[in-house]
Length: 316
Length: 304
Image (cartoon, rainbow over all chains, first blue to last red; front, side, top):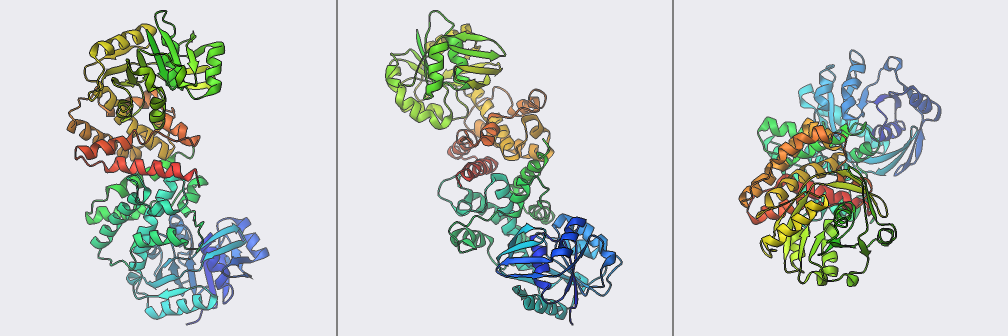
């Protein structure tokens, strides 16, 4: 299986990292919402700086009808835009494999509702900052984990082929028969770090793991993560990594090996910009799973509701 | 009769300005703000808003200048209680000191330094407009009673309530003032902390179905702690919350004002206080702890 033509939908920081890298090894078309974003990409290409340094030529548009048939579609939008992305390609690109790369749970099932493409489930640990519409800075070159979304009957061999394409493009990748353990580890990590950062207006710093004073944020993080682990256990998922360890490690040495580590999680960036957050797909999906499985998760529920309240204050 | 107000922010100034209108009271103000103290001494203390008051208490930044006082009224923010009473305790060796501060735990601190303590809760509120001038936003009652571990006598409590009421600040003297204090405490724990985290004004937060769920949970925990302590509520805090939709729809509670201005909050005396007392009586307070930790985290973010 070879991939001459790849379509990436959504060019936020993760989407832009995919576009820039895959553009080195395939013809990449990019579907974006804003026509001016497409125009800028067509004119300047996409520049990657940081862990990788290059500029890729791409074809961008806000209309998928103009694209050549891709063999791989990467849906890299925010979780709440997956529905619209899947709708935009409904009835098209019958030979493509679709890969989802969102935070949280459930994107694969949304895509499956709009077509019978094979679907690759993935979870990414890389991160970057979008400096402009045509420039992304590649900060953390950690791996993207991918595996078949089994309900769609995806063959493991096609996931391996996509994994090879990613590796060739310079992205780190792990191909697994089942990504749920990694997906849930990251979900529980994100479901605690993101909303707590959004509510405290604080980047992810050492206080998130400190448990000295009774009111230290580390206690709350620990308790939230415990609730998440109970939900995972009830769902029959064995976690790949302990999310509390992920939290402690991230703030201790700094995932960037930088003493001044203070990553601004995406939900904090959204709240600061007055944008809707992914709370329904991150902590919300965990709360819904807890309810479905009959697991008590009162702290998660309270934090989820406070973020909903925080979002509703934007226009006040 | 000599009375000293310790801490003359908005609430302290309301008490000082009223008391200084009474001929038989010599009213003193102790505050660390030099501009405010100088303005009071030069031009008097002025209240404007719900009512207009202009009077002339004596103000100082030096605790050593205070004469021996019959009563003290502590109105600092909770995090300044210890330093304020430590500095002024000498003036109250033969007097009684009343806290009119938010939350719980202040009387305990005051009792470390003076022999006779009065528990108090006050609803009037305002804001400092400029040195010597306070906008009086909300009128309301004050409840006072002996603080059991180091109580003032009931006759002292009645004497102070009488002075305050005659000065224009309606005050009720009670044998047990905990019910009023805990009513306000629990109401504040639900409204102040959660409005601050969501940035929603008072009534808007209470109307928001998701936020209200958390507020109701905070209130239930608070009531369970109060019940375990044998405290009978003055009023159901949930009822106060319901009323706030009408009277404080777009009002920003003081903690939200503090958060927006990045000033330290009184969370340790509110949700933190509930967690503390809950532990003493074996009542779990997980949602109050969530609010406490998040506000502490928010305060820490200002120093990054």
